[in-house]
Length: 234
Image (cartoon, rainbow, N blue to C red; front, side, top):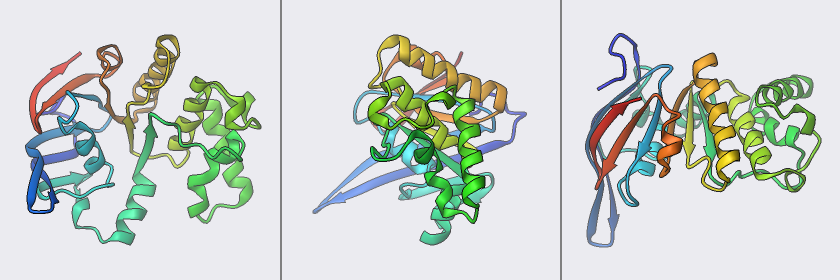
């Protein structure tokens, strides 16, 4: 099930299951999910609380591992990778954007954006240049020297998006990225995500409870009780 079957499925999911063991109880959160996400897609995952949408997002991002089924990213079974290789894959392939911005309060916007690059062999000058390019891309280069408490919520989320972009990932994973923002600021952030998708080809998977936010995506996938129930193109 893809938005355009002529496109190579960057994310391929077949009969995916996820269960957690709590004492003697086994709680299956995802049941036999089948989903293709072509490169350059922008997918909104929606569903009631407990539907499994954040679990699915975490599996795609390599934060968690499935119990059963198949999960391939760019043809690779990421669930088969050992821990150190998975961490390297995640650092090179996925950018994460969360509802809470998770910025370091003692660091400037630029230093926050540089953080993912500390794991690379880039020089300090290269890290600085990459961070400034990312900040310019999200329209906040003029705040590069400001700390998070000197920025508005929308500005902090733009810094978080720049941090997610700085390593040039294939996929952006967004978990309620506008949940803490007012409508006007949320629309600005969503417009930026849409621009990153349409103009720069970034593949975006976004969990949201907000139907207005989902309209910015190319399509919406609805989950309920761990099952994919509907899928609609916009």
